[in-house]
Amino acid sequence: MIVVTGATGNVGRPLTRALAEAGEQVTAVSRHAVAMPDGVRHVAADLAEPTSLTPALDGAKALFLLLSGDLHAPDARPADIIALAAASGVRRIVLLSSQGVATRPLGPTRVAMRALEDALRESGLAWSVLRPGGFASNALSWAESVRTQGTVAAPFGDVGVPVIDPADIAEVAAACLLDDRHTGGVYELNGPEAITPRQQTEAIAAALGSPVRFHELTRDEAKAMMTQSVPEELADDTLDIISAPNPAELRISPDVERVLGRAPHPFGDWVARHIAAFR
Image 1 (tube, rainbow, N blue to C red):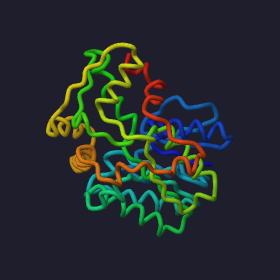
Image 2: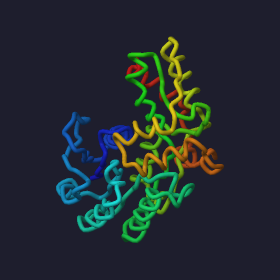
Image 3: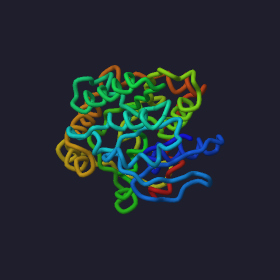
């Protein structure tokens, strides 16, 4: 059995589906019960309280570990989840980390994530680490304003980074969970080209077949919006990257193609699959 945390999210949902379609027994973990694919068991748990995960880990051979925003807070102890998994008999963990661990190693949230990666390496379990850059699905934060006002509001409108389709992350995660060849792999995951918020807006407008205006936010305005859902340190780290990406953050990684045998999906493909959210 494979346990998928964050199973209702942009990565966890397609990963759960892919594993189930591959014939694996899957336990999907989220805070609240939701509809799952046929044959998938759901367990409600809050990773901020690792012991709540115990029923999900019973009989599990592998765990996909995705941290929610509150587990990036200074007082969080996500390494306890790794220890609990090992004590429960889990043999493999695939950790969703962050590109910033390598590209911005001194940022507060990156230091904490590096420590979690180190805890996983020292756990005695088989492991793989995924380090994605920005998610294409972050554009869903614009969906309401596109629907109601025909507007996208974002900072740094002409600064581009290569965003990754979460479906690609899920497919790489499935490969790492199922194939021993990926044990000990650290994979940097991003998209096939850098794309700016203004260009993302244009892609949404093209898929809708109607105009969408772009409004540029100041950094302070963007931070105020972000800190409604993530810790201040994580917001600052993210804004540092998207305002002035360094060469490592602009590099197109070969790792998606290395694992999957195909190039990562461009942003336009993600938009086409999710355009209903913007109508």
